[in-house]
Structures are given as C-alpha cells and as structure tokens.
Length: 325
Length: 211
Image 1 (cartoon, rainbow over the protein chains, first blue to last red):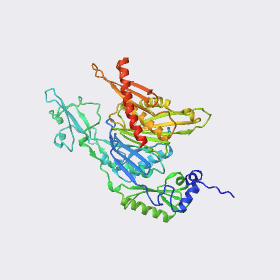
Image 2: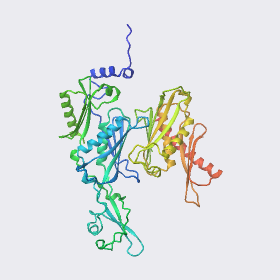
Image 3: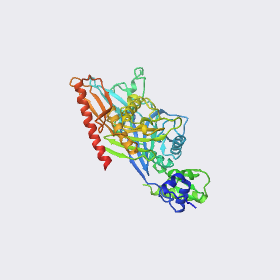
Image 4: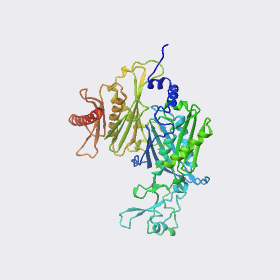
C-alpha cells in the first residue's frame, strides 16, 4: 500500500489540524514555543511624536514576535459632562489591522477597540481629575510702546499674576484622549499586544497646557472692569506649543495590568498566546486575563475551560505581570 | 537612511524605509487570485495612507477626525496615482493573469520632507517591497528630487523624476510642484540632477540587496 508522506511545511498547509496534533504530541508548538511560553515584548517610546499640527502627546511602538503595533495618542477638549460622576476616564482607541484590504473596519478591529476602551475605563487607570483643563490666560502686553509681547500666565507657574486675572472662563472643560493603533503582520489574537502598546503610550503621554486669550491690558485691574462687552466673544481654548512646560499625565500606575491570553486545544492542552492559523482554528476555548501582580483587572472567557486550567492560567499571568519590567 | 525588507509576514513582500524623520512602510500583496471573470493581465493598484497623526504635507488636505479611519484624501490619492504610474512600466503584468497585485503604503512619520520628497521615498520603498515579494519586474525604479532655485523669486519649485536606471535611464514618472517658469535648459539640468540622485539611491539599494 502506498503511504502518502509530506514535508512538515506542506503538511502544515494541507492539513493544519493534523500538523498541530503531531506537534502537540511531541510537546512542541508549530511556532516552536513551549506551551506556556509567551512571546517577548519590545517597546520603543515616543518615536511618533513628530508632527506639529495635531498634537501627538504620547506614542509607542511595540513588537512581539513578528507583530508590530504603532500607537499614537492625541488630545482634544470637551465640555465637562456634569451628569457623568465617574472618577475615572478612558481613552478612545481605534485599532487598524493591516491585511492588504481596504474598507470598513472588521469585527476584530471593532471588538478590540471597544474592549480596550472598556478595560482602561474599568481598571481605573486615568483619573478624570488629571484630564481637567485649568486654562492659563494669555495677556498682550504692549506697555504703551507699540511693541507687543504675549505672556501666558498659568495658575501653578505664575500664581501671583494669575490671581488678578479674569479666569472664570472655560473652566468646565476637560481633555479627551484618542488613540490610533496600527497593527502590522498579525499572526494571532491581538489583544495582548494592543493593550501593551496602549498602556505604554499612555505612560508616555505629556499633556500640553491650554490657555485662553485675555483681551485686556495687564495694567488694567481686571476686577474693577465693569464692562465685559469688549472681551473676545469667540472664546476658545488654545494649545500652548511650548514643549518645556508639558505635564505628564498622572496615572494610577498601580492599576496598570498586563494582559495574557490563552487558548485550549484538544480540550486538554493550555497554550499561551496563540500563534498561527492552525492554533487559532483549533483553539475553540479562549481566555484573556489582565492582571497586576496581586490584583485581577480583567478576565474574559469563551468556550468551556476546565477549572484547574483557569487556575493555572491566572497563576501564569500573575507571575508574568510580576516579572514584567 | 535605514532600510529593512520582509518585516510584514502576512504580505508577499514588504519594505520599511527611514530617511531622516520620514518613515514609510510598504506592503505588497499579490499576485492574489481574483474572483469573477478571466482577465489576461494582472490588475495593479496602489493605496497610500497617512497615519492620522502625520500632519506635515497632509495638514492642508486633512479635515477629518484625527483618529478616525478616513478613506483616502486628495493628497493620498495624488501620491497613490504617482506611485502607480511610476511602477507600472516595470511590472510584467501579463505574466500574472487572473490576479491582482496591490501595494499598501503607510506613512508612519514625517516631519520635514516635502510632498515630492515624501512621494520619492514612497516610490523607492515600494520598489524594494516589490523586489522582496519576488514579483517579476523589469528594473528597480528609483527617483530623485531636485529643487529649482530662482534668483529673483523666493518661491522654489521642486521636481521629482523616477527612473529605470538599467533600462537606459527611462523616465517612468515626473512631477513638478511650484509655479516657476521652465525652459529647456533648466529642465535638462533638473532632470540630470534627479537622475544623479536616483542613481545614488539605486547604488545604495544594490548594496543593500546584495549583502
């Protein structure tokens, strides 16, 4: 009887399930990692802070295996929503996975974006107070000479000058953070690496200061001015381009977790960070665990996974979070 | 200048170029089969996208939400068209019936490069990606940008020309930006400068690809 035999890479293509089973039987995975072995993460910070128009306030590039994620965070302002009593804010991420096709975002991209938003909100990383805008006031000072100079006074840098200015405007605003993540070379579930990229970019954020224009001369005592008619009615917040007075975003760093994903193949084998089509197709049950070294921040599960396996996965994730730099 | 090919595993070929603060990444997908009726030659398309926070060059054309996922805006469209035109002569499309070859360009960062300089890097980077994809080509297209300076006028024009250096320096793309008056002498000189620069790029590519 003729027996059909294939080279390993051919078999992996024509019968990925059989190939995977044989690998697992040998105690190895097609990507040659161990069952519980995670891919190393390499992070570069701030490389995308290059544009001068839309402010990129923080950025990161994270590489894990062959996958690369570029994450840039930009900032905008909104009026404070007084009905929202939450003490913590989130960030609005848009994930884009490059796959050689254009068009509407895929399910995966939308789900990733949404779950990143939810996770950042519920893990209480960004206190809303740290996004609050206390605008400085820009004052045109001509000292009667016709030579004008503009000075911007901020409450924390120039408290004395700021005290006498009209500062009751535009105080009910806060910043919103938006992020764009571009994923190159996807080879497995992306939540781990996208979460890492987003968190690293958040840690890299340096918020610009904002100011409003004051139209009056500094020598005029502001409090005695009765007439407000000559104030600039088109009030707007301006972004101060001065890079020297950027403020880091105050984050609850203790709440920042590390995401670890697992899949279960053949009902019995727990694999860390699925990689490749064969593993992704075979792993019908999956877990995603976000944890700091002592606190569980997020947990999601699909399919049915044995209790001991969940325990093992949580232990592994916590160990990983503890060892992470 | 920093070059790297084969960064993207999911694509047939890819290249990554950093030139000063201008970072461009190109992925080539194809030849991919098409659905539907038979076509004798492969169809070829180029799509250029700026990451939303790249504002230099794109600034005056971008009025969409900075973090949205917009379609191509006019500047991306113009770059795509140029790249498509410049690369088309080097491809042997008739060797790939019933398929498509698609090039996806991502501009990751750009602070100082002008529109034409950026486009030039995109063309150069795309050529490298095509080589990496092992799609048959006649020659590697490279380009150079020259600035036409005017003594009286402060407004300088820029000229971008792309060449196939090993095919008698055939010009495959040509773009002038600026309102300057041109005569034959100026144009010849400009093209010569572009060609010299294209050859420098080509020499670098040859060195890169053979090591």
